[in-house]
Length: 250
Image (cartoon, rainbow, N blue to C red):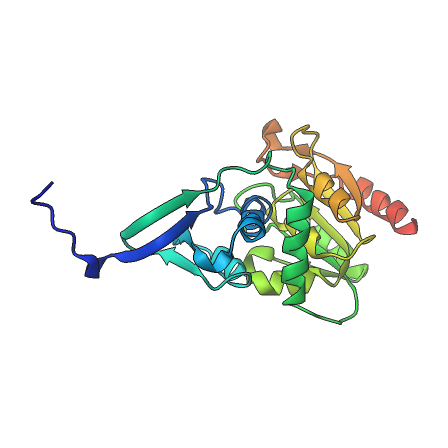
């Protein structure tokens, strides 16, 4: 050990570092509901300015952008680091059931940074660019929803701030089960959400989020290809169209 030479010029030196990420943190849903609340837990118990939040160099930018909207004291790990003290915050809750007080603070803070007074919109989130859980006849569905004045959105193509701005003015949101539906968080109370999903007792995360934020949640059940939870949805167009028309009346 005496022969090992540490060249501090090649290191990022951090006095008090905090690691808040886990193996699910590259996913938008898990980031917003599982990781961002940890920042408010730190803020609740300590002076946030005394700590440096450390995050990996993710392929996407929403992790970095969202953290920096809360605190500027964040470092992206691009090379080896030297930590004098390191803290790790483990899982706060069962995934899909975020702590109400902390997730409410996330919404309140980030919405204040993205005020937008535009007229409400009806939005459909397409998973056209996703590898799984796409609709088998989405072009037909999109044509119908456009006739109902729905705006078609590809959530993964939007920056984090743009997603907040877009969905905070949505009063009716339709999407298949997926990370994009996390954006219902930014909607106003008593807005409406319709989730296209299969019968899976473990896929109730969006129902739980809707309850937390007083969103009127509805679902349309359909089968998935090969009964695979990540398989494409085999949607019956006529049944969906009739279901939507009934829902529209309420």
